[in-house]
Length: 297
Image (cartoon, rainbow, N blue to C red; front, side, top):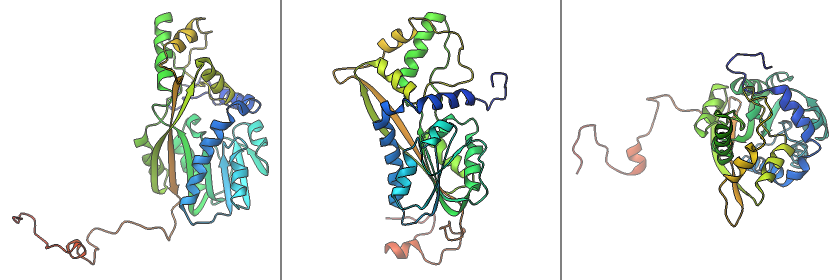
């Protein structure tokens, strides 16, 4: 992977897979956070009266699949880049790559990707493959961290790196912006695309525990352009000491980007063609209609 120079290769996917493998044995340390993120995503299913029969969940860490089955979905397939992670999902499990989905067109009427797509090199391509694997009028739900997540840690590590080495190596992954969300869905061919943002606030009394939790969850940096050298001994102590904090501990914010989209279907609402209206807005509002340029007073 290190020899790849194409600009769209951002992440070392084999390294990330190995870290997710190891995290299968340690992520119980951060289970409350993982479960809370999954619950927030699955709550979106309550916003629709549609009933689903065949679901695919990606990156659910053994939490999402049981929750989908508990909601009465009879057929749930789990997929993860890590064989160890997907083995804990129960039911039909597939070790697979989000960038090369191994499913036929029209396989699922619901796809849920929980906090995993931020490690994909070609996110538009992955979303397009997900849409092709869906039946018409199927629902896609995903969460991923947005720009601003771990921002104080990013800035502290960059400043410490610059002070100790005279340069900075990327140590926190890049995250998408809110404004990118709906555009990504639309580009992938989803209908009725929606992207929204909410903040999940955490606090750490010991900043070192933040790094340990990221490691336990398999969420440490796998950026291809990272500095492969052993970091200076003082790098992390210096960076962690610079994090803002108070009596309540060091605040950590996860800016949670949620994506919602539907695979195109014949019964979905569509925008009317310009000029096709059969009623006047002024009649609906009960106000007189004026032509452009008329004086109103």
